[in-house]
Image (cartoon, rainbow, N blue to C red; front, side, top):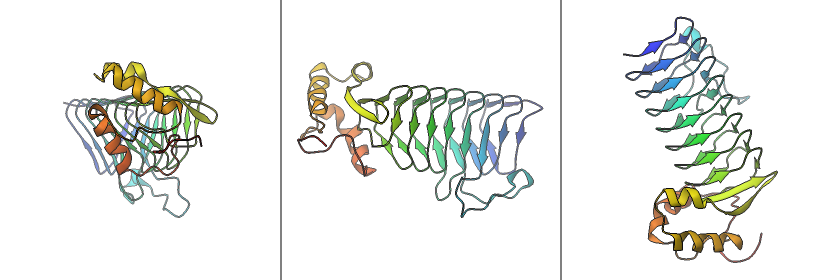
Length: 239
C-alpha cells in the first residue's frame, strides 16, 4: 500500500506502484509511472512541462495531459525539492535503485540508468543520457544532449560540456578527463589489469582499440548512444 501525505498532489494519469511514499507538499503530475518502493520527498515536483518554448505549458493538475511522461524505476529515492520534467518525445526516465539527493534537477527527455547517484544540487539539461552506476558530485552541471558512460564519476561543482566515457573520472570547469573511476570499477568486479589498461588509455585521451571482455557491455552502450563530443576518442592523440 502506498503512503501519500495529505498535502501532496497526485494528478490524473499517474500510476503508482506498490509501497510508494510521497511526502508533504510534493507534486506528481501525469502522465507518470512510479515504480514499487519509490520514495519521493517533501516539496518534490515531478511531471511539469518540458522547458521548450514551442511546447505547450499545460495545466496537468486540471487533467491536461499534453506530454510524453515520466518513468521512475523501483526502489529509487528522490530527496526533497528535486524536480523532474515531462518528456517531449520520449518519457523522461530515472532507472531503478537510483539516489537523487536534494535539489536535483532533471530536464525533459533525460535517460538516467540504474543505480545512479545524482548528488545534491546536480542539474541535468535536456536529452542527457546517463549510464548505469554513474556517480555525479554535488552541484555539478551537465550540458544538454551530453552522455555520461556507465560507471563514470563526475566531481562536485563540475561543468560537463563534453561526453564522459565509461568508467572515467572527470572534474573541473569545464570538466576534463582525469583517469578512471578505479574504486567503482573494482567494486563492479573489473580485474586490476583491466583497470590499469583503461587508465593508461585515458591518460592519452583515447579508448583502447580492443575492449576487454569485462568492459564490453558498458562500451556497447556508449557506442549505441553515439556520443557527439567525447572527452576520449577511439584513436590515439590529444584533443
